[in-house]
Image (cartoon, rainbow, N blue to C red):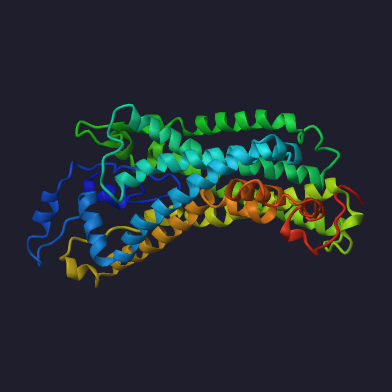
Length: 405
């Protein structure tokens, strides 16, 4: 496979599938001299054979996409780091754990999201900033393994607590053995082990070349779509990022249908419902929102990953003529759309704390306690209000009797 072919394949460094491949598969070392020699004449044909030249072309033709790529991600880092650390700490606190059976899942999800964001910093340094943050033997292989394992863990954790809530609502008598709080840590450990197992081949696929660059092994790139790397990556990622979110969607639909059939959704008199049922309903709504949020942000990124092999770079042309070439126009449009979808897709690693604040009264009170001090929300009347309305989404809404006919 030539360098040009590798740039147009799914293994290109600038591409961002679910598996955000960090390094180009067959690229020589680059320097500013490459761009200077390529762009010395306006009418000179530009051969896009390095990532540096490709990013330079994109910056000339789609500067908005490059700006989004460089500016939005650091904002996600800042918001996500604060939100995930706070979420993990609060869900692991004894007070919230005692009132929320899925607290272990939500705390683990916050930790996995934060690990992903920390690892993503190294990818961001590689592309679009062109800083070799992975060009170290051992770290190149380890990073690829951990990066994929973190993404798998996030999706499978959401799948786990969605299945648990599905069983407890739709099959309450069968769910007793699966919905115990003591079982949650064991399930989480099993999920982490499965994620590492699924991601372990990445440690073989990637290595540091003689040019001191983290790249895909030549033995894998030479075989193209028949390679073990291609088959494994497509298979595992379509399962985790395609099939699993769809299963989560169907499970959520079943939960909503069951809730609708079992009880009325409007709460006309909050005193007729036990505090335990209100807390259970509030937790269920929180989990449903987290699940739907994952689906909405994950599936579009998976779709862009699935179609990227059909999008290729255009022929060698002068810079101005690229804008008039249909192949290059398609690539520029795809790159812009994918960049925006990628940034939106990252928000499910960042914004869960806002869902918790909107759907959980107790969580929101704890956040306010941290931000504003212990005097906030400390009046007895407000404590009583939190018992009657554990979630703002439940005020003046419908009465529901879960696990009953």
